[in-house]
Length: 125
Length: 224
Image: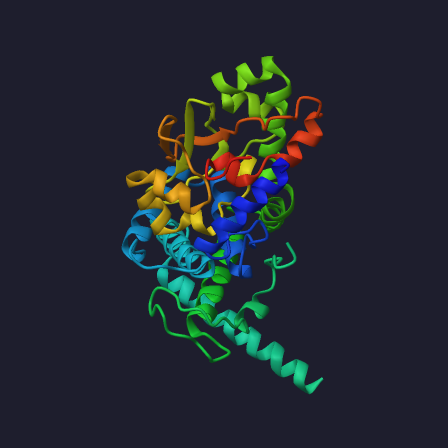
């Protein structure tokens, strides 16, 4: 048996016990996962926030939201993980004074309005 | 790879449909097309991004290039190239094991989460495996983003308590005669495992060898 086949066998065994753990797993399952990931990476690269302060918030959010006793699928793990990432990002941005809660709420409303408007325009044009 | 999303269209995210439970209601299935939480998250992210961009804290093009970088350019292939070079170049191997950060950087791989990378060699006597018990610290520049199971609470808690049992579930049986070391990544130090070079590969080039190095091999959950 050549090493490729040996590995294939190990991979198959592993896949039987841990669902969906192949190399073809998507990095980001929804567009917003990619956006919030990139936003934090960009802020760290620009030295606007220290990685450690974000990471500490991520750790505590994961602690609150994840339980080791529950069997989760790969997709469930990713969805939980990025929700925690988003919560930690929001906390980091608030703490750094980059955003305010009311400002975010207003921005969300503005986006909603413009999306509704765009859709209405598409239907009538 | 075809399942990857480009990450630029919030309109699409709003119509996104998934039928997997998430942590607020595990085990339940969503049948409705517009998951309000999903829509809420996409909107929250877009609002945050717009505010932060408007304040000049980040450049929107930089955001796009980060997404592209992680989706296309990084991934376990970078790590595989590093490992294959170490297998074929003893001087580089010494450097890699003594100062992984610098040796890896010299090959052009570096970034936010990869600032301190320690490389550990698997041998006939010692098998190393990596975890991040607290979150999912991972050497992104060389391995790409962590696979879902690496982020799972089950792996994070169990591999420390019962590493042999967990590795066995991965299809990897470590004999009792081999010492097993579990390394817990932190925000400061990430680990990359240099797997044992498979037997019978003496005549292979570094490029050919790189093809044999897998992501799980470099986490320590698989042999090659």
